[in-house]
Each structure stands twice: as structure tokens, then as C-alpha cells.
Image (tube, rainbow, N blue to C red; front, side):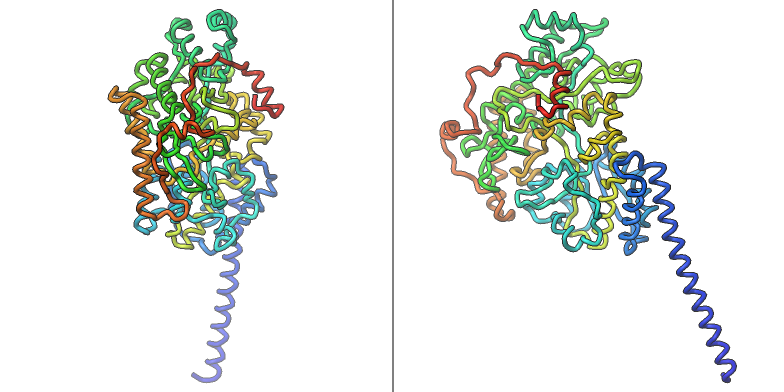
Length: 584
């Protein structure tokens, strides 16, 4: 090649290289502009209302775009149970996240039990099945002990600092205490919450003729029951005294009783705490929790009364006995053979006066226009209120259950996939997206969303949901706590043992004795395996239960009178108390 030709080719190559560089830079600007345009589109069209201004929302979205750069083009997989909240995430938020960040998300929806099974499989095999899980905080005691779950507080301050949203505002999450271990570390990030409350037909309770008739029979006002005595009287009143309204049979109670895994939730979702089984303390009783498990520090020491537990204590036996009695006496006959899923829609059919154990996750179904429980203006004929308590309950104790589905990440997930999934998790709960998601699914997670104008505006259509979440009473509704060291192993024991009472095989006392013994057996196996560290079980030696019944707190001796005078409160007065910052 002569000098002229060499110079020519050098010039041509340099020219092409320069052109390529300019083109690449332009393409980069185009991509960044594409993500910004996508963010604006979603902020304007979908993510309204928000507690942030649009400018603040765009800044938050710009952070996601920038933080996601190393992971653009990656495809990740996450999983959750199938409820409205997660359907919205799977269909809407995953799409928005991909357009704004360039990370593609497959968000699978499966049954809750299957989610737990997938987590267990990944824990045991070390093989990465999903990059992130939305898993109930009920497993907090399991997660903090086994060492498979990533402590988020460590991750956010360490390897995940570069992908942790500056405006995440952890203290704004109302479920933060539920996902914090006894070691003070945050293990899960709340994604959705719903409580288990009392539900009743406000229109029937306000009927002057029914009010007069109730007071004549029972000697006090028809209203929201404060204790189980009043709930039982109201159940008897509508089932046996009123009998029909508008020519249709009515019932004073609704529940479900089919022997299946969801029967276990009926009890582990804090039925015993409502009766008064555990000790004082929030979010869960200490040293004895609502499952009846006693701990010494963070070590479970027994569920049976002989070891200081309360699973088979008088309060627990009372709780099971009342569950059975009310189901048989005051609910529709078919309720005994129903599962959780089959029984859920029944109150919306218009023949149930009250339900002591009703999940607010059903709120959307209860507000559908045209149903018997919604008036011609689209407003509910029903209301929700705090659940009544049993005679063993004391002020300062947990009073009900609150589900808290939370983002959970395993240490076995590769770091790049973990970081990308963490970005998606934060996107699903960020202030830009959280209020709209709450309005769609009615499962609030942020204090700022609950107190927003949008929630005030929608409150009349939600039958007390907003008022409950703004009330001081809310703190007494909590998930399963840290006393339970292995939720999957222990939870399955409940439905199996309680199911035997419903079939008439054993008495309530025998069922709870069997359950407590079975729980102690699992705790003993875990103790022998010695895999849970300093917070693993260490069973107390067995003693005569009378020793423990004479000690302060739980287990509590049997009351001479388990049905004190019924007590009610007018719903409108209850709302006023909440507005003034009082429980009642």
C-alpha cells in the first residue's frame, strides 16, 4: 500500500469510527429519552392520584431508570399468591417497570401454599427458582432463624445500597414491625395488607323496630359488639328471633368448617388471641403469643400448658368451643361444609347479619353495585368495625389478625438478579405507585396513603376501611409473630387437629391437647436438629399445668363465668372516638 492509499484508508476508518460513536451516543440519548417518555406516560395516565407531585414522581421514576442501567435487557421472575393486589402488579406494574427501566419481569400468580412450597424448595436445594417472592410476614420467625432469607436492612446498607430507592421511606410502612425479627433486622418489605375484622349490616342495626325488640329481649342496645357475649346475643337474635327480613331467612353468623388446609388459617389467623389466650404485648404477646407458644428470650420453650404454653389452656378450649357452637347454631347449614374461598362471598348475598371473622380483602366484592348489600346510590349497607373480644382478653393484648404479604429475597439468588428484582419490588411500593395500587386493591401499606385526600374521598364507599386504618385501634391487629420458629411445619398441625372436633371424633379439650402435644413434638425435633442457632427451640421440662396456671399472665385459669354481660357500642360513636384518637 503506498502512502496516499494508506492515508486514505486511515481517514476513512477514522471517519467511520467517529460516525459510529456519534450514532451510538445519539442512540443512547434516544433510549434515555424513550425511558423518560415512558415514565411521563405512566405518571400521567396511570399513577394518579399520588401523595407526590408529578414532578416528584418523575424524579422517582428517573432514579429507577438510572439505577436499572446495568440490568437493562435482563429478564427476571417473581411470584406471589393470586389476589387483586398482585394481579394489578403482574398485569400493570410489571409492564410499566419494563418500559421505564428496560428490565422485563415475569410476575407469576399461584396459590399461597404453592408460594411457600417454592420458597422451601429453593431454600433446601440452593437452586434459584424465583428472584423474588411476595410471602406472608407470618413466616418472619422462620425467616429470621433459618438464615436463608436476606436481611433487607443489611442489604440496603451494603451490597444493595446502589439500588435502594432514596425515597423508599421505610418508616412510612405500617407493617414495618411485622417484618422485623427479634434481632431488630428488617427481613421483608410490606407489599399489601388486609385485616380480619367484624362485619355487620348497618342498615338492619339502625332499624328502630329491631333496636327496640333487641333491647326488650337482652336488656341493652343493639350495636357493635364489644365482647363475645354481645356477639352471641346478636347471633341468636337474628337467627332465632328475627328469622326473616323481607321474606327471606336471615342468619346471625357466618363462618366455614370444611376440614381442609384453610381451616388452619381460621385459627392461626388469631382466633385464640381474640378469645384472650396470649399475653399482653404488641405486635404479639410475650412471653406467650396467640398460638399459645411460650418463648424465653427468643427461644420457643413449649406450646403445652405443662411447659408453660397455652395452646391447650382454658382460653383456647373456650375459643374452639365457641367457634363450633356458633357455626352449628347460628350460621347457614351449608357453612359447615364450606372452605374459606366458598364462604367469602356469602355475606354479599344479603342474608347474613354479622360476621365476627371477616377479611377486608373482600371489601371490593362487597361494594359491587347491584348486589343486595349496596344501596341505589352505590353506598354499602354494611360496615366493618373492630372485632369483639372473649372473656380472657385484657387491654394491651393483640385483638385480631392482619395479613401482610411482603417482598422476601433469598441469599441463594445471584446478586445481579437479586438487585434487579429488588428494584421491581421497590417500584411496586414506591410513593409514585402505591396510592393508585391501594385504591385498586384496597390493601394499604403506607401511612401517607391512608391519610391522603384520595382515601378521604373514597371512604364513604368502603364501609369503615379507611376509618379503621386511621384509628388508634389498628395496632392491635397483627400477623403471626416471631415466637413461631417454623411456620410451614407448625401451621399444618392446626387444621388436622381442629378438623377432628368438627367431625365429632374428639372434644375441643382433646383436640387442643393433641395440637399442643404435636407442636411440642415439632419443637423438640427442631431442638435436636440444632439448626436454628441461638433462637432455636429449647423445651421447658414438663410440670403439672397447675404450676403455670398460678403464674401471672398466660396460661390463664378457667373463668367461673365465661359469658359476662353483653356490651355494645353505637357505630357512629365509635367512628367519632377514632377521629378523636381514642380506641373506643
